[in-house]
Amino acid sequence: MSWSTRTVFYVSDSTGITAQTLGHSLMSQFETVETQAVVVSFVTGVEQAEACVARITTAAESSEHRPLVFSTLVDKDLAAIIDRANALHMDLFRSFLTPLEQELGMKSTHYVGRSHATVDTTQYIRRMDAVNYTLQHDDGQSHQHLDHAEVILVGVSRSGKTPTSLYLAMHYGIYAANYPLIPEDFERDALPSELAKHTDRLVGLTIDADRLASIRSERRPNSRYAALASCRAETIAAERLMARHAIPWLDSTAKSIEELSAEIVQLRALDAPLI
Image (cartoon, rainbow, N blue to C red):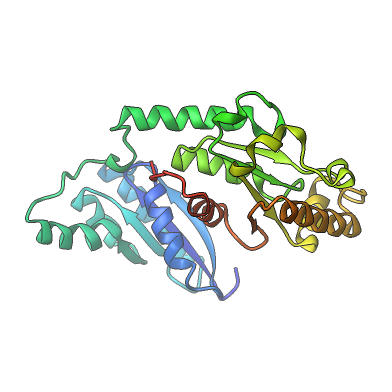
């Protein structure tokens, strides 16, 4: 483990998603620090909290630096146990809930896992339907019901269409389809006929050719598909085709699917509250 690597624990009495999301956001501000993540979910009793402290202690003993701990534990007694660990403990609920309680003049519910509960059945069902739709319309598998899509992502193979589509469906409940642009489309210099009627829903993804070649090489090493020359030719042709049809596009080279999804929602002015 290098001097700049820190073990980061994400401790939660539920899934740990909130702790990871907030913790990752904070750690991303320190670009030179490498992290080794450990997720400890469903810490709901004293025995589990003590076991978590033991894991943190072991990590501290095997490193020159004490671990970092981001926790979202509703139970103050369990949070106090984690406080005893040889680590920098950032209790995210305590940091935010206490001032909110003071400002709002009321106590929080202290309900474990509330942020991930399926409180709104309608929103939950929509999200599941959106995921099913996206899986059925991944990589141009189905041309049926494209008129139901709220956004259709287009781009060359391995430019990030599938993971971005799934993120839009899972986190925003957006009906997202995606369609590959292939050499035959570039030779015709035209969009696939299935997409011609839906240009108002299209968003393109492009990517740096070197990065694309690296990604494709992991899948098909030493192939024409992964050759830098092929990747460069495809990305140039795809951008030219998108420009011709006035399709807005985003560069996925150095952007996360979270960033791409947020930009797509804004770009197409989609009614997409995080659900």
